[in-house]
Structure formats: structure tokens, C-alpha cells
Length: 297
Image 1 (cartoon, one colour):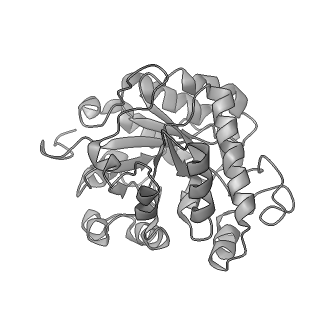
Image 2 (image 1 turned 45 degrees about the vertical axis):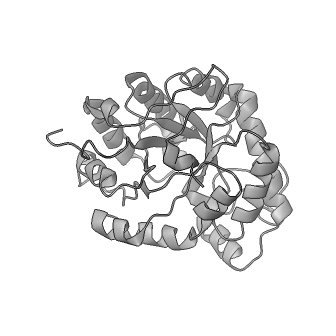
Image 3 (image 1 turned 90 degrees about the vertical axis):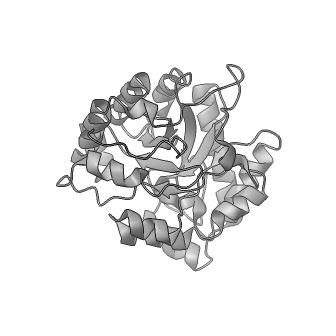
């Protein structure tokens, strides 16, 4: 890297690798980045068949990164009955979920119950509660999902609460950052007021978010990553999607080749560990100490 991602006055960025548990190649790549201290955190899909074998592997890198739940309502099968959302026993995909959420057709008790089941699955496989919770395709922040989701997580963790990802950002930062502006703007609109609501419910919440991309392989990921780190919020989080391509990934997801590009770029950035946030825990079982701005009300 020939230039710094931000100047020294900016707090370190929380760099989170999404989709742990999606495939062996994705999970293995994220584990390698954790060992190199090139990421701050990883969030895991816990409703897919391979999760019971991946969970202990994620727990093994908990001394280096924060580990969290990638709450999922669009890929694979729910962990229990959801006759309103998934009458066939399979999640419907993002388009139908979004349409149902905006039309008010989702059942709050279904969302809350699946939230608990996925937390159960995370804890059973890792032996720990999630340090943070975000959403696959940001589903946790959707209108029609968010209220039931936040109530369920608050009930599950009445005392020490996990950080909740706010996938929205200030429109001025989105425009100044450039890149996949339409995608970032749409998510910011859908997630409007979500972070404020989560903070009022007593959750730590990131302030500032980036990482939206078209997943094109034509632009070097290092250049995109530099853009993601610019115009940061006071507790800025950046998502990424690294991993090795394998047959399992090809069956499950459309983003294949780009993941290896991200993995290789993150491995090559030797200075990255000095630019990102790293978790400190008061004890082996404790939650990480999040940046102060994330815990401010």
C-alpha cells in the first residue's frame, strides 16, 4: 500500500469479514486473515449444514477477533418452523423478503423465534455468546424485521449486550466515498433510524459504515478498501467478503471469484493490522471493549 487509508487522527476501523460458515473455502480464508491480524471481526451464518463443524474453528480464533452472528433470513432453511415467511421450509430470498417486510406481511413472533434459534446455534457451536450481531444482506435492519429482532436480542441479553451493526451511513459520506453509491444509499434508506433505535435499546452500535461494492473483479480490491476507509464515522465499520472459491461456495452464492481477490489483497496489506481495531477482552469469556463512540448513547 502506497498511502495511508486514513490519517492518524482517525480511530481504527472495525474491519469485519462476513459470511463465515458459507463454505469451507470462505471459512478457511477468514481464519487465515484472523491469524495474520488483517481483520477485526467475522460474522457467521449458523443455519447452513456445515455450521456445527465450523463453529469450533471460529471459536479458536476468538482470541484474535470478535466473533458474531450473521443473522440470516434469505439463504438456506430456517432452524424452526416459519410458515409465514418460509412455508416450503426454505428462505425466500432477498426480493420476496423485502416485499413482505415493506408490505407488513411478516409475523413478528416468527422473526423473534428464529432470532433466538440462530443465537442458540451460534452459542452451541462456539461455546460463547456472539460479540456482535449483523444481518446477511442487512435483513436485521429492515422495516418489518427490526422491531422483532431487537426485542428478541434484548430479551436474550438483558445485561451485557452484543454490538448491533447499523448498515446505514450519512448520505454525504456515501457520496464522497463513491463506488456502489446506489446500493449504499438504498440500504441507508431502508435502515433509517435503525441505529438510533438499537442505541435506545441499550446496544453498542457502530457509527459509520462502508464496504458496499458491485463485486466486479475489474477494480483492484485494495483501491476499493482505501475508499471504504475514507470519510469514516467515529466508530467506523467496514464489511468485506474474503474467501477461497470452492464447489460448496459456487452452489450457495453468486459472489465467487471476487472473494479470492479480497482475500489475496487483505493478506498482502502488511500494514493493515496497524489501521484496524483489535478486540481486547477483560477475561477469556468477556465481551470485547468496543470503541467508546460505539457505546455512547
